[in-house]
Length: 221
Image 1: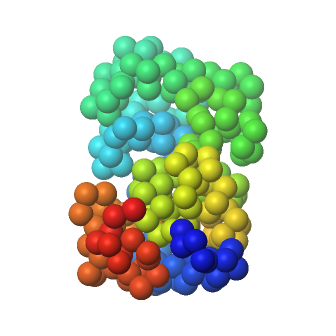
Image 2: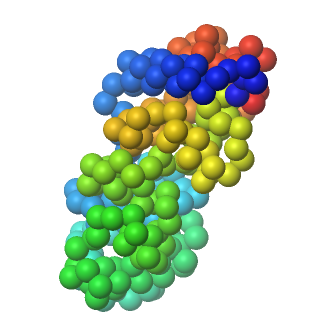
């Protein structure tokens, strides 16, 4: 974040960053395959410390065996563990999935709730996961998903000096209008995976180079 940059100027720069990324990655959206909010909740829990590609390999069999919260709530942990083993941390993930499904059945009639307050009370669902669900399954811009890509780019682009996801999210929410929050995360994630990578950012082909203070020093930030 440039010391001399006012908040108003930073907002104008943020708006141009969004415009360029939207042009670069039209239709950016979550890579997690799902057909309803409950499936997205399951996929997002599985995505912790795991690639979206691997999750998408696992979920078809999982959803075929347990198509809804009612079915997953009755599942045995060993069977769930077997189905999700390749996603890593499979024991804790299986416990969270079954406990989450039981809570959805017992407290919400089998339908995944659609508010932040209710979602974060479910096992295995924190604010980041709830933001994914609300923005992508319910079309509700409650906040900005801050994963490792968003965290890295927010700092490199001078949009936040914060070091925690919670504070970075607040900074981004102040700079971008609410209706952009969900898409903003997708755009930053796409850019982080394809251009602004952690170890070797490709500043030479970056559409944001002229707007990025880190580009002047080879992408470090």
